[in-house]
Length: 114
Length: 110
Image (spheres, rainbow over the protein chains, first blue to last red):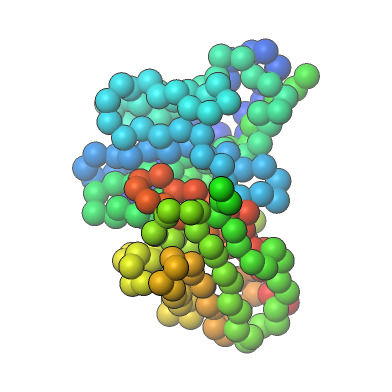
């Protein structure tokens, strides 16, 4: 069975500082990894994905994520946080024979303070 | 180009009733997946439809059923509603690996 862990329920950063939202995964076979963001009363918006290739993936709104196979991690990063980045972030994975079934983490609330 | 659309936006039902939620995929997408997101939780996979067939199913009881139409739109049906079925129901469409989500239907069961 595949699983995703987001160890921090909440992350607080000051505007202009770098941010990291952590994600670790467990899957058989090669993982396909995703980050989504959810604003209040909205659906999920795709940020970025890792399928294969370069371990550093760049996505929307200045976000990037680093795939680390040995640590089974896929942390989301941004060099300089904005107040408008405040939202709920989800890491998700496909893997093995469960193509099509995205498994999500519990989510991390990111709050960026002015 | 319209994204994924879902209807209705909100719905209130009573225990024991049945409900149907609807989803129109993003233009060009042929696969529709449904997820349940309970308050404070991550989305949980219900099932996925491709070519009008259920391709994969998550750990949800048979009370949850679906359908995909020839135009790729989809319905999620839930019978014999329980209080625990109260959640945000998300539809996602895809052509490849990347899933695009709709705004969701908020279902409240009283």
